[in-house]
Length: 148
Length: 422
Image (cartoon, rainbow over all chains, first blue to last red; front, side, top):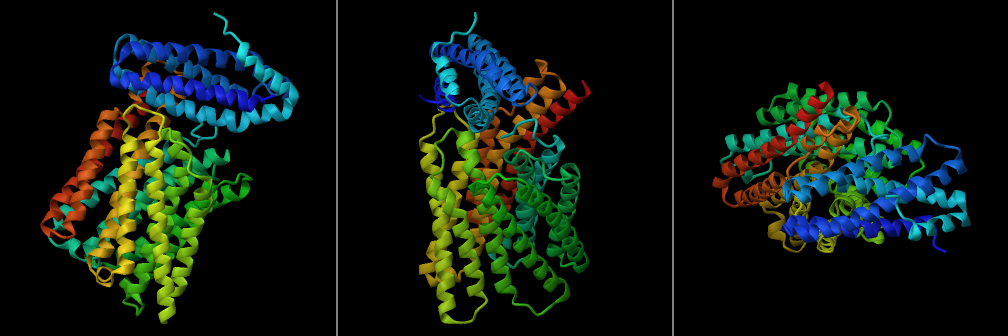
């Protein structure tokens, strides 16, 4: 069974692809495509964030007893990611490509360094701590639905 | 990689980033004012001054700032005394570079002595702080190893520079031509190129959405260049025909390393996953093209004796490596790092209030306009090597390019200050 690192890293890449497609469409001024890709991306990233905050992080916090550690930083960055996503959705609705691309510049750097920390440090730590249970938890992402 | 929690205070890296463009402007204006035939030969005092304004005032300046940030985050520990080291290094590097440039241009021994003390102090303090951070951390990667090697090269470049300044100020009998060649070789290949390549393994995939650099290249490129430089230096100190052949073989290896890195960078850029236009991508393409040009010029010198002895050869290498490769990739990186750092620190101080966000951004259009101006500046600088009358317009354009960088970066600082006082 693939572990936490494999499952969640693969989902990061899938989210990246959706976002980059939305951004490319915004750069070309093809707004319906941009909005469609952006909506698909937002659904997936919400699912990802909710899964981490509701399922994975509590398991990590329980196993380590750390509630003020790396998961706190990740939650803060999730809030920043959500804020930038909302700005890009608004910019796409207004067909404002300057605003969209300005927000996406910041967003991409934020997301890249966020992913780097999760994929390089947090997920491997989850796998080391949780053992085979980590695989079961990671597998849960597939069926996980973000609360509306 | 630029995480807030491990990151040094805003001004630790930013003070370097906002100073560098001023040195770029100064270098361009010096060239524009003294212009005429100064690009005709490398020993012209003003040529030496402009070279150091770029190498120390622009490149070493930004690379010090970027290293403070990058090392903090890659090691997850801050270099010791980061705030004080940043303030002292920045002040000493700024004053030392100005003293060196003025001392070289006007042949003033007392200024050269001041420059020696200031630059030695700046480099010693900086390298010590980073070296302590590197030895304290268990983290290892090709990037960290490459950073360590490039800092060794910087120290060696500085020692040779101190010797040369001493020879100039005191009129000592030293093999100046040979030592200058080594000083330039270690500075350009060992410090500038090795550091940029090592850092590229992290920042190119991350900022440009390319695949990673091949693992074998990451492991061998910088150590290979370093080994070639060592062998080249030893061979250069021995007077014998076989030593000359060895030195030439080392130069060939270094030239191939530059070309390999440039070609790999182009290849990765072609496979990038992001479609939107991006100034950083253009700056890195410009840098890679200049680097390939420098590699080819050096390759040609190994097979073509006349070119090897031509006055334009070392000047072309210097122009392509400093203004072409170094300045371009540094600008490309600054356009990612500086806005993000500003945004990150503003987020913290304004608790993410909405107004903070839009101001922490450099419009990609202005950054791409800068890339195009810089490309023309490089082309004119190279052309001026054969058509001396072009030296002045090339200087003007270099100054304009650096001024555009300032015009794009300074609003970030203004936004940060506004956020602090809000």
